[in-house]
Structure formats: structure tokens, C-alpha cells
Length: 322
Picture: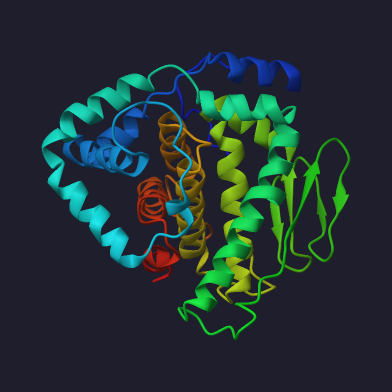
């Protein structure tokens, strides 16, 4: 379940899909960091989180990231250097955090909105991300892991099977082994047919609540489940009621962060998108986890999304599975 009612402070308007898209495109909703998240992290910790965003996003300026091959070729040594640099710049933490927070106070991500417009709307944007950005990104990572002997995959690279994306609208869709998906069931990852079924209504409502980056976050998170299946972390019979659902959901958030870092560094995202990502992670977390459902607390979901984003590497996400 992606959406969490009452997370952001805004007036709920009932409108059609076109109206909803226009509304989040205009920036009518609040984009501030959620007050409950501020209290949970504490002021000092929140400044530290925002400082990490500053460092990962490239320091000064509020625009989208610059195109750079570093995004896809970061080594562990380079990551260590980045962490050291972040520590040296700690004196600027408070100032930078205040500036980023103010910069994102009431407007959605301009970079994401521009790309949604360019692709022709939310549905086309999600298909583009899924099949031309996120899936190829992970296929490339699998090949690199094998080439660098981080994993044993042979000369042909670590095997990676392409996933598919289906947008579910008004009519229910029969999956290849996971039952029927409709708007009521919502977005579903089906391991049996390597397909992710996105509820368009759910995605548009999420974008209205949290900002346009919700569309990209959802695609990246669900593709994280596909990656988990490829690596053997989840079985074909896995479901969200499984005992390890908390670890799996946190890990998928972390993988979403890994991809988001690359997408930022290739010039497609701005800081506001990452701040929207923090709000999304917090909003979809379980406020009262119990034996029947535990998909990770809001604080855990934020932590692991940012872990993936700041590390940019699968290894950095391994702790989520413990």
C-alpha cells in the first residue's frame, strides 16, 4: 500500500486524472519536510541528513545534476573519498540545510515536472522510466558486478532477466500467475511473470500527495523487488505478509535510492525531487507495525532510501536485509 492518508498538510480536492496532474504540476501542495519526520530525526540529525543530500547532489546550486559518467562508475575508493569530503564540509551543514529546506518549501520538483511534460504525461513517463532507464540501469549494474568479480556470474556477466511494466487503468488485468490486478488491489510486483503492474490511479494520487517524484520513486522501488528476485533474496511465492517483509521493503527503498543517485548525476533530478523522496519514504512507512504487517517504520524507510542514495552502491544496502 503506497499512500498514507493525512501525511501532508493540504486541502484534498476531488478531481479527475487530468485535473490531478495539473494540480501537482502547479505546485499547489506543500513540499516541506514532514513535521513528524523532523521530530523523529531531531534537528541535528535532520541537518546531517540534508548535508548528505547537499554532498550527494553536488554542493552549491539548486538545479538538476550535471551529466557525469561518475554516476555509473563509482568505485569503493571513490565512495570513501566522498565520505571524507562530506566530513570536512560539516561546518557548512546548518547553512546548507537551511537553504535546501527553504528552496523546497512549497514547490514540486521542476526537473521531474519538465520530464513528465516531455514524455507526454504520467503514464508515458512511468513507462519511459521503467523500460528505458531503471531496467537498463540494473542490467548494466549486473554486468559490471560480474566483470569486477564482485559476484560470480561468469564471463557473460551476472544473469539479469528484463522485467516488464503494465499500467493498470479502468479495466482489471490478469497477471501471469499472481491473480488479477485492479485499481483496488493497487500496484503489484509479480515475480512469476517478471512484470510490475502499476495502478495509474494510485500513482497519480501519490504524485498529488507527495509531488511528481512519487512516480519515479514507485517505479524504482518496485524494480528493486525485481532485482531482489534476480539475486535470490525473494522467492516466487513471496508476499507482503511474509516474516521478512520489513527487510525486503527497506531494501527495495535502498535500491530505489541507488538508482536515484545515478539519475540525479546524469542530470534528470533536482534537490526537490530528493526531498520529495524523503517525504515519500516517511509517508509509506508503517506507523504502527504489528505481526500482521510490518513493512518498515517511517524512520527506517527514510534511512534506507538515503543510504542507497548517498552510497550509490548495492553493497551499502546489505544492512537492510539483516
